[in-house]
Image 1 (cartoon, one colour):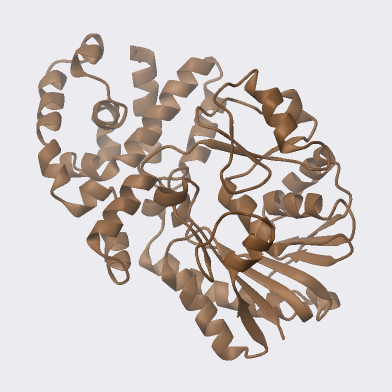
Image 2 (tube, rainbow, N blue to C red; image 1 turned 90 degrees about the horizontal axis):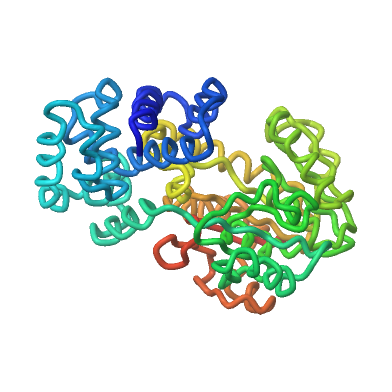
Length: 418
């Protein structure tokens, strides 16, 4: 860390710590406006910014209005979040800042004694979790999502087999390993930049968290089927299902965002997939959906959610969500699930998924849906995965836990129309 990097870290935190926009969007915009920053500069600035987000509860306990005192916030992030010794920063510190950081370090015991600073979770989220979890489970969750995530990729089975691709990659990236659950996944603990690697550019590799890969396994799409990805987004799971189907059958990728669907099209071309039809819809009630009523073999609803299972990657989400936004999402999730269920044929499969850990968004939504829709029955996720020789059994629901599985937090339920 040099003086220039510290200055830029402070400047970007002035915007990020207002939580008005996603942190990655703020960083991207900042780097576009500061093109002279080198690769190492950008790395140091981004790492410091995300360390500040991961330790924001401690920063907020020390500083009043942290975004106004962004330099001090950056210094705290370096010491508490990135493990810098004060002596390492000596040449960067202004008058009084050494004493300030010494005081910060002396408060470590105090931080351990408070649930919100120990777990690094805001009070509103702790209150929500305490309805369902003991404090020890909240602490474990908070600590697990405060870690950085590895880089997971999926091998496109249209272009290669995992064992062969992994052996090829290990000569270049010795730390690369097979993901423990997803049959086509490879993990890079040290997160190398792969966006210009030949295996990424030719569509052999797709960046996708292992938990997300498992969701595609639960859908279990087959070659001749009609499949609907109801909330396709940028299409990671759409692409995984397209490969499952060996580029046969038909996948309809619906989303309300034209921009997200536009991002899917070049990914389809790179992956060598032509069995996907992206289509923008106005909402879950768009009349264009009616053409598929009762015709789909499998429908995936990766519902809009709080994203609280992805806090390793998006630590600012816990400050950009609120009880009010969660309540709005709950109504939207139930509406989308109800609309998507109309597309499922008799004997067909409906998969509901979120990247949230809140039971209100997960089990409780399924209970409400089944109560209103007795024509559907719940299948056992553990049995479905076992039939595919995936060694993962979290019970009737899929519940990927960051602390236990080293993936993002995911939930899924598989329903079948009788």
